[in-house]
Length: 445
Image (tube, rainbow, N blue to C red; front, side, top):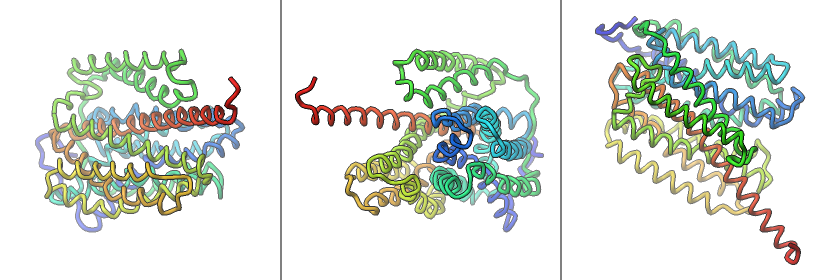
């Protein structure tokens, strides 16, 4: 166990490093994967459990809410129980909950188990990130960033592909059973290799008020984003109520946490300007990226008549160059001014968005796929660069808390980006139908 003031354990080398990095990377991959793998399987799940598709979406919402709540708690949980210990506990709980999800026979059962799965999975993202940095030699820390970034960016792409393939060819429970062998191998490898990297435990008082405020405002905000479109947003008293609760809860949470000696979420980390600005950039970039991930398949299916699998095959190209360019991005973050690297990559994102704006209903396959393929080249430079910039701005003692808060920002930004994209799509579709109806019936009021 690493205690305060003790020298850090020697980093892993050779095959031990490769196996340890693979275990941490795959643990992060399956957690991020489960955010999107169920999206295309909702009709299959709804049919199998005899519920409506709108009710089936709670399978997605329940996981997202639970995940968003526990991610920012990672720093406090790691300080109280130890980083490696909590990583292993979360991993095993995630696998057990995945098994229960696959065995569920009713929607309430499935939603309850998805909540447990989200609660367990939330800390795995930031913990896998910080543990990767610990097991790599300092001069190769960029490689740890690259591995983590590859799994974080590739998982949302492969999720719909795997979900569609499994649901179409087997049955929906296998989207959850798929996690079990991965969890087993990751837990075994982590147990054998990561124990020397355990951190000191601190038995501080539990910030119960802060925890309650976090659950209230994050839960209200996430449910508002996930259900706002079907309730016509703030035209609905229910959505308005959720918005007010989220706003008041958020302000109260900030005030309370800023005045606590041992806060459950250390928001004082935002005093570091580099961390604050990098977190804002991650919110904007990741939200915009996920909005495209949601909106493009929607357009392909509803306008061009693609199947869900065909649409996923177009979007999946973004993962190819993202994976291939990650090692290069990891090397360049130590050699090139991060501000220049990130700015050029963001401009490349904008150029790919402009390419999408030129699409027409008669576009061929490669016209549709090329922006995704080319955008993948910039993704590692954006996300590895911003992650590096943020974590270099904080102290070593704040590293786990900073990683947790960054993962929290990413999680909420994806929900916000998806809600914004689907709402804008719905409004545009309504206006288009109204325009067409007026054209077809010009003399009727």
